[in-house]
Image 1 (cartoon, rainbow, N blue to C red):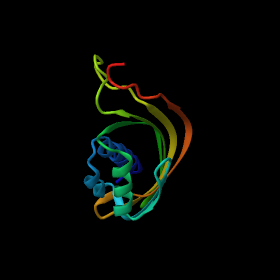
Image 2: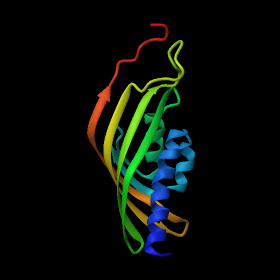
Image 3: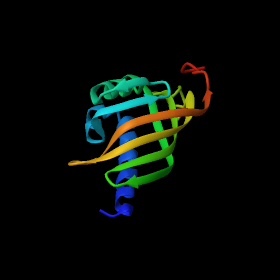
Amino acid sequence: MTVTEDRDAITQLIFRFYALMDDGRFNALDAVLTEDVVAGTPGGGQAEGRKSVVDNAARAHTMEERTQHLVQNVLVDVDGDKATVRAGVIAMLGASTPPEGAMAPEPSMTLSTIMGYDVIRTAEGWRVKRIEGSVIWLTTKPLVPAGQ
């Protein structure tokens, strides 16, 4: 693969990671994470090993509370079979049901982060080996019970 093809594959890997979490498909995260992945994320604590990281993600992203991740400014630096990635990620969280009379729910929290990833090339393709993040800003809005 060329460096350009590697960058594209790695960028798609990061997008796929967040799409799987938004869809609640945590068991499918095996396809994007190494077995020995380490993750330290805002609000998610530290987790080591794929099972622990997947379990942590499932606890933090429930279907009762919608989550949508907006991934932007993905920068990939490839060095052979390793790469580092930096991405801005905005996570919006809120109830899964809209208030009475509303078309859709509103986010109750919006979190902006800068995320860093180490990825490696495996026999199955690129996989995430390390995840770290820091919060840039956070907004919260109290949930209003339906009908109020």
